[in-house]
Amino acid sequence: MARLRKDGRLDLVDTPAQADAVMSGTAEIWITGYVSRNPRAPSTTEPVYSGFLSARVTSKDNEVVWSYLVTPRKFAWGGIVHDLADNLAAKLLEARTERRDTVAGGHSPDVAAPTLHGAGATFPAPLYQMWFQSFQEQQPNSRISYDGVGSEAGIHLLAEGKVDFAASDMPISDERMAQLGANFRHFASVLGAVVPIYNLPGIVRPLNFTPETLAEIYLGKIKRWSDSKIRASNRGVSLPDTDIVVVHRSDGSGTTFVWSDFLSKVSPEWRNTIGRGSELKWPVGNGAEHNEGVALMVRDTPNSVGYVEMVFALQHQLSFGAVRNASGQFVRADLSSVTAAAANAASSMGSDSRVSITNAPGPGAYPIASFTWLLFPRDADAAHKAAMVALLQWILTDGQKECSELGYAPLPREVVKREVEVLSAGK
Image (cartoon, rainbow, N blue to C red; front, side):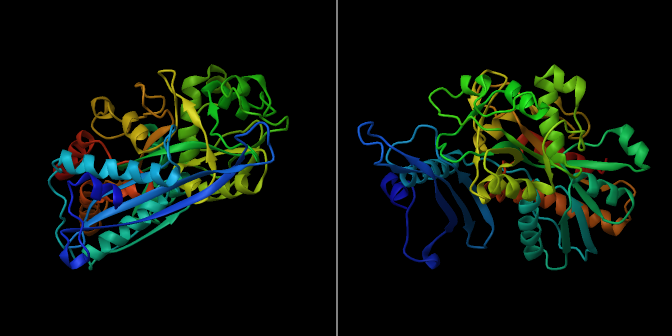
């Protein structure tokens, strides 16, 4: 509030009744470790912090008009509280100045909708739960439930007709749909990032990972944190001479697909021996179910490394590293770097949104980013199809304004426009 008041472009009032819009949010700050800034007194230490600040702005009608989540910048002055406040205030003022036009079609008609039950990816599950609640508040006739059981399980449930829609972090090929005896429509719903998480007591500076290092850790070729290849990209960090405990998904997972899709692009050995997929024959490591399970195992296991969607790293206060991208820069996942990864996605999309954006070009692009998709059958009955179309129209327009507060990036405007046109045409 102090940053916004100092800027002067927004008027701050005393009560919600006086306001045109209301901002609310959450923040968490935690200690990642301690460091001594005085070599003559190494026992005198100061805490090092990490955290996030998340906010949404709602109108008088209680509709979300903007949201965002910020994490600490690489180079920050004045402490984490000032850094997060400055960063969020700057993003809000930037959005206020841009006044971007929205894609038409955000207000779906109030329909007497049947109950929709979906299942699938855990990658976007926190967002989907919030979205479906918001949609039901605006459409009281609708009833939507969702089970985060993993992408692979969700796809099978949809193919067997046990759910009305599925969520997947991997696009389903025509060949795979033929094997399943199904035909799904794909709609990208949001952007997210898979991040390398780790538990290294005493390491307070975020680590840098090269693609080759990540591949060799998961191939079992790099076995210790003190390996020269890890040290080469983390000069000045006192890495422990301990074994690396590798953690991976044990269930069929779209997050694993994104992770292995990236490694297949950057490591010929990975591509030729392991490949990409939702279920892999892991050479090393311990398995855990769902993003939540991997996050908890890494949190509870010193010297471990794993991979999860960014929001799970933040929720469990886990350290996650920067990854070297196709332009040679080490980039840490945040909303800006994930958005940059999808900048050119629309131009490479065909008649649907099935496209990979891992290892995307661009200096600011985070390399392990992905769309996540909602799937529903082309042969759905008229009532379920109308309900799904209404939900998707809301997700592609109004819903995009809500996703950033949870750490997911909204779809590029060009992608939204393309999908709304396809949805309206019924293709």
